[in-house]
Structures are given as C-alpha cells and as structure tokens.
Length: 117
Length: 107
Image 1 (tube, rainbow over the protein chains, first blue to last red):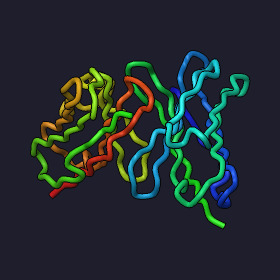
Image 2: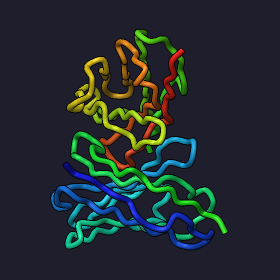
Image 3: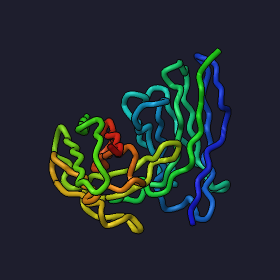
Image 4: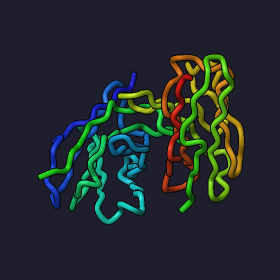
C-alpha cells in the first residue's frame, strides 16, 4: 500500500521560504506524477503543482513565480519550496500521487504550516 | 484558466435523502473530472474519476454524471457517515483547478 508523509517546519517567518518534503513508501516514485495541494484553515483546496519522476514540472499560474517542486528518486522523495511567504500561505499542505486519467489517488495526511513572526 | 464552480456551497438533508451536487466548468473539459470527499480532519479521498467511474471501494450510493461543462455528484441515499465536504477537480490540462466545495450535513 502506497503511503505518503509530508515533513518540514510547522512555522515559517514572513518573507522566508517554506520547504516541505514528501516521502513515499510502499512503492516507487518512478513512473508517476506527484502533486502538492494546499488548504487554508477552514477553506477549500488549491492545486499548487506537480512533478513527473523525471523532473518535468507544472505549476499553478497564481503561484508560479514563487514555487519550485523537485524530486529525488534515490530517496523516494519529492519536495516543495515556496518563497517570500506571507500569512496568506498559512495552510495544510498535502502531497499526493496522480494517476493519469484518474486524479489524486493516494494522499499524505497533510501538514499545517503557519506563517507568522 | 478554466474556473470550476460548485453549487450549492452547503446543504442539509435527512438520512435516506437523495443528494445532488453540481460542478460547472467555465469551458469544456470532456470527462476529465474527479470528485473527492473530505471528512473533518482528514485528507481528501477520491470518490469518482472520469466524471462517472466509481473508485474502488467507494459505496455504490455515490454516482457521477456529466461531460463537457456540467457535472453532477449524486448520493442516492444519504448516510450519517457521508457528512463531509465534497470537491470536484478538473484534470484535462493544467492548472488542475478544484471547485470551491460543498459541505453536506445531516438535518
């Protein structure tokens, strides 16, 4: 059974960079697309972007200037970096595995990142 | 970018009721639509993909229909465990936009 686990700091200061890692277990990262999705407290879901295991990426245009998603196949991990964060970036961040033609099938439990000084 | 609009934003119904949630795309997306269920405190769970295909393990009281711009998620007989927020998501092309969500409660 594929499992995903987000990790990273739960508190980030304004203007700094948010960095999260998603570790995949129970299956290989190779051959799949992997996504990041976030959810501000009490609000809806926002697609951040995805990466193919080979490194090809696609980002939400609203975040594109600040987002980088990368992959480390040797560690079975992929990562999210979001620069110049503000309070509006406070959210639960989820990683997920995409299956083409299906959607986000496997999800991590999510990690809350708060942007505050 | 294509916008995804869900309605209603919330609803309250009785156990056993038939519940219908609508998702509208601002441009055609063929059948490239998924529905997710998110219970409080949990990650979303995939219910339906390809607009109408039930994900493995999902109860048959859930069904989806539609194509192009108009899509529907139906719960044929609402159960207490169905209390959740439901989201649609397009995946025909990037960005993979989500609808705003529909919160379902029991009356």
